[in-house]
Each structure stands twice: as C-alpha cells, then as structure tokens.
Amino acid sequence: MTCDLANPIFTDEAKATAHMEADRWPDGVNCPHCGSLNVRKMAGKTQAGMFLCNDCREKFTVRTGTIFARSHIPLRKWLMATYLMAASKKGMSALQIGRMLGLSYESAWFMCHRIREGMKPTGAAPIGGKVVESDETVFGGKAKNRAHAKKEPKKHTVMTLVERDGKSRSFHIANVKAKTLREKIVTTVSRKSHLMTDELASYEKVGKEFANHGTVNHSADEYVRLGGFVHVNTAECRFSLMKRAVFGTHHSVSEAHLPRYLAEWDFKWNTRKMTDGERAAIALEGIEGKRLTYRQTNDAANA
Ligand SMILES: [Zn+2]
Image 1 (cartoon, rainbow, N blue to C red):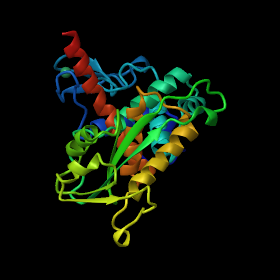
Image 2: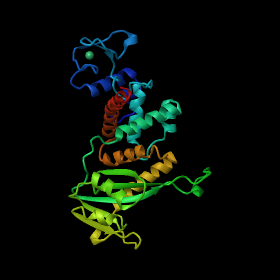
Image 3: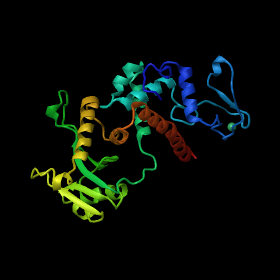
Image 4: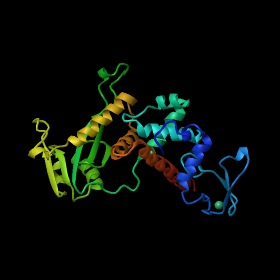
C-alpha cells in the first residue's frame, strides 16, 4: 500500500477491490469454500467483484471469510481508515474517522476496533534475550482534571514489557502484586533476558528467574545507574506516548476496550521504523486474517 492519500484505492471501489484481491491471492484467486483454483470472475454490473467456483458452485468475493464479510462499509473506506489509523502518531478517534469518511459514529467505532484487533500480534513468540524493561503505570486521571466528569474515572493499572531498541507488549493488570507481575513476565519474556525494573518488591523474586536483574530506585531520584545501563526509560517513553494518545485523542478508555488500545500502541511502537504504508499493509493483513478466527469460534459455539 502506498502512503499517498491520492492513491485511487482510497476513492475508487473497483481499484480498492483489485488491491485487496492482489493482496489476498498473490498466487491466483482460490475459492474460500473449497480451496479450488478453478474459479471464474462473474460478468455484469450487479456481480462486480463476484467469483464463481466451478468445483463447489459457490459464489464469493474478496470479502468472503474475512472481517469485511458482514460489513456494508465500502472496501475503499476500510483501506482509508486502516491507513489513517496506522499513520497517525497519536491515534485517531472514531468521531474523527467518521467525519473524514462520511460514516456514522457507530460504523466508524466498529471499524476502529476491528482495525485495532488486526494490530494484535498473532502467535506471539517471547520477546527478550537481551535487556527487557518492565514498568507499571496507572491510567485514568482525577475528576478535577476533566471538565465534564461527574465522578472520578476508574483507574486502570497497565504494565509494559519492552526490549531496549525492540518490541513491546503491554497488559491491563488487576494489581502490582508479585504473582500478577510474574505471570505476565514469565509468559512474555525469554528467561535469557536481562530484566530491568524499578525497586518494587514484587519484582524481587521473579528477577531471580532471569539471566540478570537490574533495579532502579525511582523514589530516590535514581533514574539512571551504572553509566546509563540500569534504567527503565524506554518503558517510561512508551507510557508517555500512550497517555498522550489516550487523553489527547480518546479522552477516556473503558476497561472492556483497554486491551485493544494497548494492542494499537504496541503495534505502533513495534513498527515505528517502518513507513506508514508498510505499517498499514501489516494492519490490513491482520484484519483480513482475523475474521476467520472469529468465524471458526462462532461456528464452534453454534455447533
Ligand atoms: Zn469452491
């Protein structure tokens, strides 16, 4: 995907469809129902984008079996929304996406969350093997900071695990007890890593399970030790980016949707060295692929 908003795939539905077909079927169109390559494009205006499988006789389009299947939103708008979300450094609200694409707030909200879902890592391998910083922060400000808030918004604790010069994974956690932190750390970070944390007692035991454990004492203003090696500045940088996005763009984030926002911010961090176009292409692949998982889950539940 090129990162130029003048690209016709964002305005012309036929070109958007052709773009998605090339993306989904680089080695030729195959039937999503039976896998056959013996398919033909149907002619006629009402059948635009429709294929017929000569083997199972089922009809399908590039949307079949993907997140887009049950959506009435044109593909060109999906492409544009994915691009805008992937390219914006501070995130975009559903209100803004809706206004820019001429969609209702409800449609835009649905799209934004599906796009975030696509940004979640699949089959996530452990991070680390080098220095990994762990840090926690609290999301959700005080009522006095919010012009229209009637009661104090609920606070949420978020932890982030971030490789120095590498990837990050963030989680919404119930508390900062040793057991809670350990569960996330040992399932996310390779044991060969050098774990870097603050001096929270909860890290003491789990630190021994890793190759090394360095701690920095925030309370004593001791942010950087050993010539700049012992610090959790990368994690703090991640938090400040996320907080600016959440309070500047989304104002507040509900507990139910918090993990999707965290996925969006991890995704943006992990792809920060890519171009906007490359990042958007990866997000799009994620959305295309993930619908099948939903389907299978739904089918299993209905069986
Ligand atoms: Zn078929």
